[in-house]
Length: 125
Figure (tube, rainbow, N blue to C red):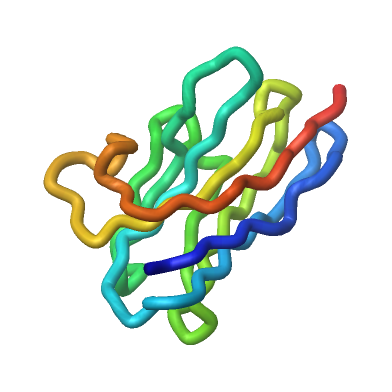
């Protein structure tokens, strides 16, 4: 069992930056693929980015490339999402997820075994 706890959300002005973190505890010795998703009010959850166990391979939703960067520090059992040039439409609850294995593309939510509770990001115009 793995517990995921996100932090770093908050209120930021358009054009600003935030760095989210996702700390894992419990059975963290497994080689999980980690990902970030978000869900805005009235919308479906959206895949943002994923990173493999070593951190050597990353995958982004096309619309996030260039603004968001995913990284991980396995010594701290933590995954990060650096978000730059934020826009009001980035307002959402951001959640991290862990998968023991990915069979297809990392966008598919059903492949993730563990989820955090989410952290609110609000971007004002």
